[in-house]
Image 1: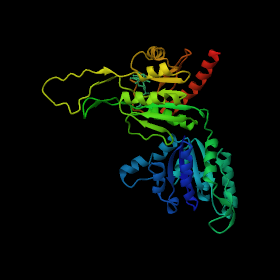
Image 2: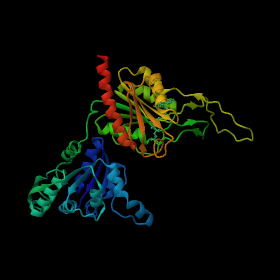
Image 3: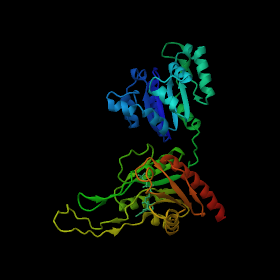
Image 4: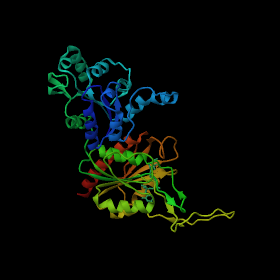
Length: 404
Ligand code: PMT
């Protein structure tokens, strides 16, 4: 699950660092937004070090270029996040949210965001009990937002009473439950392959393909968010692996095969989204091939078919392959399903613009062992991953029922 964590300007801002950690421990990817007031209490560096991501500190950049990109950044964060969590939610932030003010990044994000909102207020007891704050809270509750009640005790201002930020672990639990995330992959171990492979031609050259890893990483993220343990076998990509996966980096098809077969026994589901090279140079020269004026012919050998090998050893594991096609989509997918003993093939027409290799979205057709053909609408890769798991779980039930 992707969480946008907004931090307000209160003494409890330091606890938001523990909250970021607690959310990451539960498999969330956390993107932090600090209000200007929060930055008086805690440094962006703290959150950048914890999350491994740039921390958002304002709506506008310092240079025209940054202004251009940052002015739509709140829309990007709104689109990419599953939950917006604000801790500490100060009286000022509650008032802004309740009345729809949008004068900084966090309040602007709040208005642009359509997912689950969890607010963890913290403030002085009198501010908490003030009728204005009570009315704002009622309005926010009325919108279906989850309010994590503050605890009682001695406050930084010297008063004793309600107003202390709830414990980070408690907030994290409420985020997981309150965000309505299904945990229907709990108990599963999902082995995912992603990205391209690189097949060396000599000491400095290689052949590869345009896979960015986005599809496979989205599958890994979705599985993690739904409670699975995830082993991610990744070819060389430039995107960051979701926090909480067991990441195995590989380069070549042979390395990917070894990593998959070594870990197959631990998996209950295998999803092979990687674009594995079909050919490689079996005997790679140790040095660099010298340039001459002659034509150069290299003879490539087929690489091992990892999916087919996994199909031979799968037992009762659910095996999901992908198929990148430019021709007969469903026919080829069906052939691959049979030939490689898969339970599902996610068929990808890779000649459509805006889908397939490198893009943020994908448009696929699911071809199932039961004979069902399910075309899915074009959607962000994470949503596509969600639909793949929805159908995979139903398929497993159908296969078990048929086997009885
Ligand atoms: O990474 P992105 O930029 O997000 O792009 C996503 C994608 C287009 C790469 C992805 O959605 C996709 O379609 N992946 C499969 C690409 C592919 O290699 O298709 P294929 O039809 O050549 O292979 C069929 C299946 O066999 C795949 O599951 C592949 O992982 C597997 N295979 C292929 C060759 C091989 N030697 N071993 C394999 O296991």
